[in-house]
Image (cartoon, rainbow, N blue to C red; front, side, top):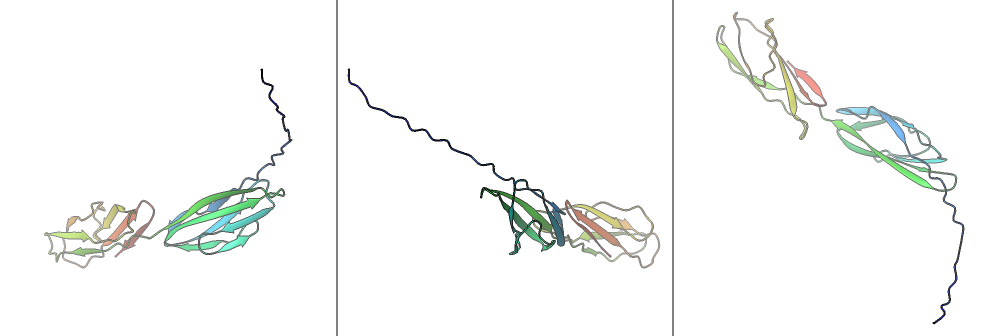
Length: 173
């Protein structure tokens, strides 16, 4: 029988604890323009590096509030421990564009139906989900996208259209 040669190497390996990157931010989303405040909630960190998603970087515990316009912004916090271990957390600030309520109407006569046509605009992917019409004559509000309405008295009326997406709303007269 052949004899084989062998040996064993042993070494103690120390695995250092990693810090945990964490932060809160408020508000996380809004309409048109949002000023967001960031608060560090990391553990085990001695160094904080922020990329605020808007071409701004910051080294330190908590950056100044940031103002964002329409779009999505990836905010990244990289933390480092005293042992030079790192951890990263990324969150997104989302700013939606408000819908723009607009409408056209047919010329109306008292006791005849007037047609109101919704012409509102909105951001792609954030469709209008509610319409609320006030016809200015004390009648109940209407939630149809493009309703008709009959005025019983000849007069000048202030019609209000309010529209809302899942995230934003606005009104027009």
